[in-house]
Image (tube, rainbow, N blue to C red; front, side, top):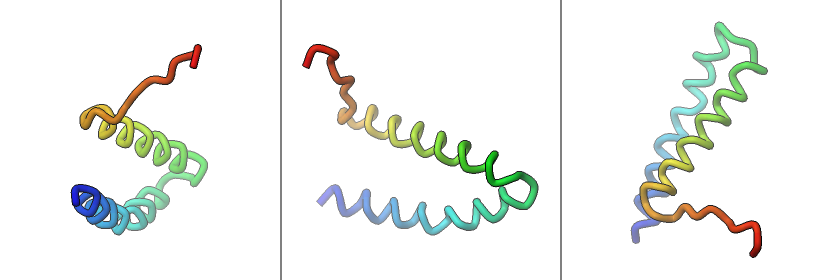
Amino acid sequence: MNYVLWALLAMGCYSFAFLFMKIALQDLPAFTVMPIAVGTLAVGATTVAALFGEWSVPSATS
């Protein structure tokens, strides 16, 4: 059931994404906002995976 809580949290956060994008695009061009958004998503996902023990660095020999 833990995945249901994560799914609900993700839906809640996603509902604010368009609001934040609209605010960000008022002063900055889209080619500046999008890399920042993608980088923030990557850092957030990596942090959550590392905190909950789901992160593993693949081996070069496997």
